[in-house]
Image: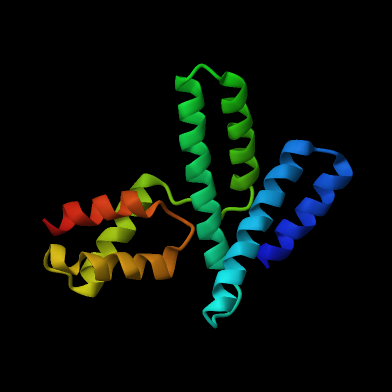
Length: 150
């Protein structure tokens, strides 16, 4: 379903002659195609919507880092382009959970899994990834869970 939305958006961007949007969506499709090929080589199915959301989150993080580096190096024009690409990518991500909701969800998962210490952290994070893939930053969630398990 998300793959179809991306394809339709790329088609519309080519008609609207929006070069940044079209270029960004082409990059997304290239990343999806690469992941599909990797899955096919290992005998897996094509990427799912959750995998696509993960790819988009990874692309978003890369653009944040690039934008920051361009700002530091005195290239505001390139930083602005990275931010435009980030805006396009964000359109296709599911709504992100707010900070307080992340804490609430982490607390419920810790309680539900019966986690006692840091050795149970992996189990908690896996449960969060199964339920909230693409909806939260798992590096933040990891820090929250770690604080709860100390």
